[in-house]
Length: 95
Figure (tube, one colour):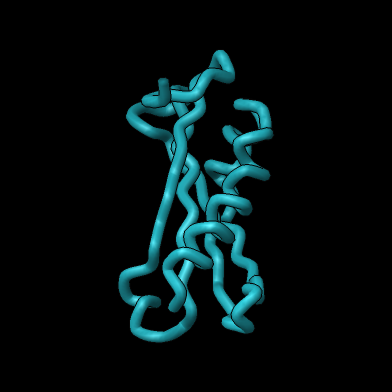
């Protein structure tokens, strides 16, 4: 797996969710994870899973997590990234 390529793809996918409102992300908490496949510029096919859960308490901040792997051994330990969105639509833990 090309780590730089995978990280760029994952950041691009997560950016789509960062633009969503807290209410939209809150609705994702009870939904199943979203899985998709993306082919990188290298020709490698990656699987991306995006899911959301309460960060610390129900109806509090939502943590959105994205994981990416190429179906090889990285599937057992996928690369991941996340962000937290608070009810006031601010991002937690970011300056």
